[in-house]
Image 1 (cartoon, helix red, strand yellow):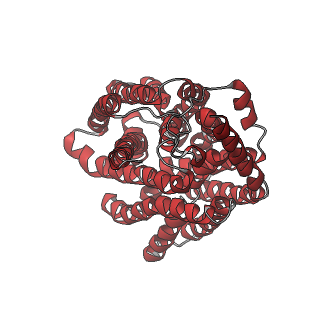
Image 2 (cartoon, rainbow, N blue to C red; image 1 turned 180 degrees about the horizontal axis):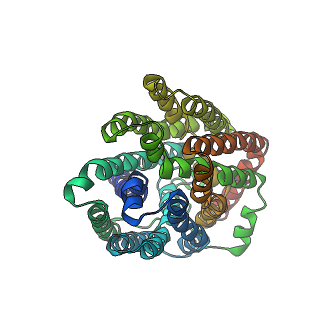
Image 3 (cartoon, rainbow, N blue to C red; image 1 turned 90 degrees about the horizontal axis):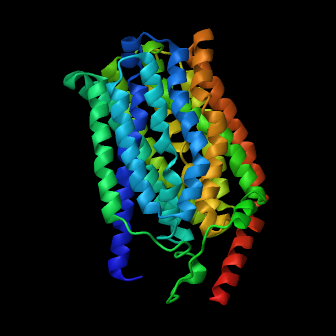
Length: 427
């Protein structure tokens, strides 16, 4: 790869990082605004859960469509469209004055939430298998950092500029700017370009979407364990995203300053965990096909243990609670980049968006209801019980699903390498 092309692919990573950073800020900021918005519309925890489940349900339904479109058409143009939709729907969400209107427009923001498979598959055609974990880890830093930026916007900026609607106008406008940047600045790449079997080939064959290859996704045993862990694994993330700040404020008695002082370091540690997980996964993958799965097992196991210890810490033991939340944050994201990389370690390039979209569809099919389930449990008991129950049970299940994948990953990974080698010979 020429020096110019090498620099350009890092430019592409930077563009997608800022897309994800600003998009995640827009998406996750609503968790920090729960109290403000709930008081504005006069709604309870169950209704708040319904607001967030609506967007997740819309995203879930559209994942297969986005995946198919990304495998058939230009990913860059579709990502530009997704950014445009993000900006427009966020503006609509800020404009409405009734709870019914807010519920509907918030659900519409889920349209672009299912657009990420295009980013990850395009990046897979810029970087080979041994680097993908680290690159995905870098990109996924955007989620917790966006969470932190959203926290600051919600807790500090919103009261200064006219409330929660004003910050939605800001993030929506940034979506329109990113749409233009992607449309004119990011080039499409041939699917499969970065696979090691095609390295240094003067001309790259164009691989086109195939329904036969799409069906093969569901014949790989590792994918079924990936589907199962995804179904369970997103529950804790949605619970923490949409309810944790209210838990700190209402049940642990934290004010805005205490929330920021506690959660800002936790979120920064969480951000580092994405890259650490991806880097560890790449390191382990070079030594064994099982490497990424083993790193994922460690992440969910210790994440569950430290979350349980943190939530059961007495309210007055603030330092102990903070330390345990920092440890939770370090282990929580270790699996994330490795799951994405694992999907691409076992599927052919022309159906990777479909494979990842299928995984997201299955995981969100259950997790879309996590906010409403959490709201119901919280209204029946309290937020502490809801968070503790959902997080520990879900991560415990993920641990056993990863153990299953350890026994299937070798065959599925080798099958892909053999298939890529056969294609390279025929060129």
